[in-house]
Length: 472
Image 1: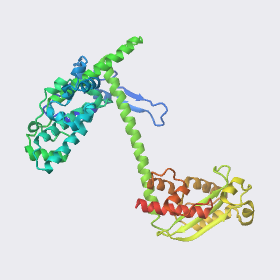
Image 2: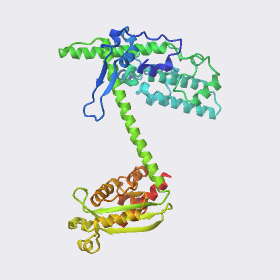
Image 3: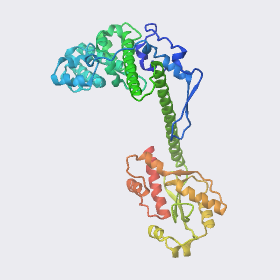
Image 4: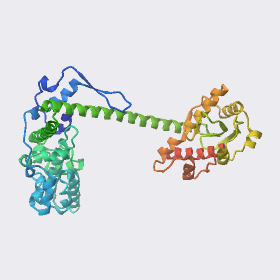
């Protein structure tokens, strides 16, 4: 039945509502048998393919629009018109309550607690229902009768369901209230005994319990009232014909050809299917990324349940293409978080230690000349020290890139599983303004990093253990 059917199914009872006749092929599909391919400029994902039959299926549900070319309503005849309502509120006219009647009695529409909602109209219906629930609870506590309030709550929920059913393609329900004839709504009789509660989604379980206690089980009907689809369809028809008229007036002023309604409906449905499918695809991608991130966090925490290593590199720059490893450091850690062994070794780099790196790390050229080892020797010692344990770094991709380049250069292999404490920290403390290692170490009360391998490794371990406790 298409997108529209899902929005109004609560009002369409089996055997009680007439299904719209399908549009003839010339109306349902301008070019039968084609596949509409839509490209999204600037987007990385492929184009979205919309089969012509899928668009035609949606449009076939709008047959009633073609046979209901209705004039636009006068402002005073609309269910809710913001300009008219402002005037009514300014004049303090009782007509300001019309949009709530006959779904609840005038005395309840005029309650002081509802005054703040009058300017908002139908968009406030869910909040009005909350007011009635609060009033009912107050009366129940003092054992006062509340059947009148229950009827008001019931009518409000019916009206809110009708509002939600007005959603049409990409148009929100609130924007459609000006196309609903208030007189058509006023002819609908709200009766709990005949409408029941099964198909009224705005009623809560507690609401239903109260209603059954007060009025008993209703006669079970599959829809609240057979008139609702009729009122809604006429509103949609008014909307469509008004939008088409405006577009055709613009087209005429620009010397362009005007569209018939069947073509306008087809393009509208196609456009919204494109948007919907693109949104779902992107939502799926985002969910997949969230799932992957959750799996990585779970795997990282699981890796700390056995012996693991925490490591850090100091380098002469940020880019692996033109910088070298200056120091390698690693801690061997038991599952309880205790450090069983430390490793630290300077590397005798090929170029002089940059002055800014010397100031940042405190590693001087003389220290490197005296204590530094060749990259091959230092890397082999590092690999031997960590063994097969999983290794944690803070911002692991940075260290991993340097280690990969070093392994290629020295013809060595580091096959350990790498884990990153940065996403763990972001997951554990999302409200922090920064997730740099220094800020995190301070946040968890760990050793402040000092831009030396062992110092930074100890700070990383403190963050990792705190994050593990946070995740649980």
